[in-house]
Image 1 (cartoon, rainbow, N blue to C red):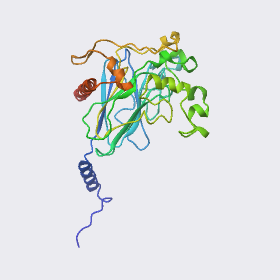
Image 2 (image 1 turned 90 degrees about the vertical axis):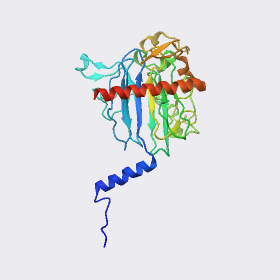
Image 3 (image 1 turned 30 degrees about the horizontal axis):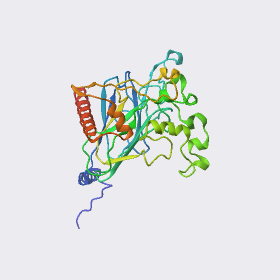
Image 4 (image 1 turned 45 degrees about the vertical axis):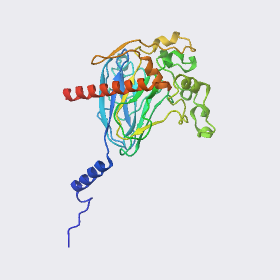
Length: 328
């Protein structure tokens, strides 16, 4: 009688079969490249959802005009955000903390902790194979602290729109007085501010029929049409792309630094954001006008500008990966 092999009894055989299945399905890890175009250092935080493995880092320092990339396995899901104003405060006995987006870990790594609102969030659920779809969005449901743009920088197969999304408006400038966080460094959501069911989409309002856009969420939506403005803002805020795509997450995609403390003296009706007519991107590549990034996040980008976006993102991803390999 022939020998019967059990996958449970042979981990090596199980691994070989698993790898073969991944190859047949065309599974490919995705790369997330983080780019800081703010005028100051930010500290991105990374939180993997339950059941998803932690990435190479759960939080790191990203100086101005720098980038860093991580790989994520197929099927990974989680969120990213930027922390600002981070330091070890003598008043708290040297504990490390951040002015916005703090995860409460007391150190650069977040170690499984999420962002304290208000913070602009980037959320991903990656496909388990190239035959599936990635889902991604930029959310203002937990408030806002920095502008963020997400762009597809790989060469995915067919499936999904693979569109850029994000929020490039300076919501700190136009934030209503009652939603402003301490010193105007961020803009809170109406849910965090008032805690009522109609603003939090809870209780009797925990469904899309009863929970409707509020005056406050409409301010966010008007400024950033492609971002989540409240819990049931799905139709215009969730984007898809074929599994195996790579993504670039850019903080402060415009060349100007968003207002934070200065927003305390700004009018709540101001909707103007500054852009530069010329910006130099690492490696000598020049983009004549950064304002097209705002168009990407508001749905007005032309096909030509979209092509430039992909070239720019691919360049950033390749550069960051090269530096990562050289520094290892």
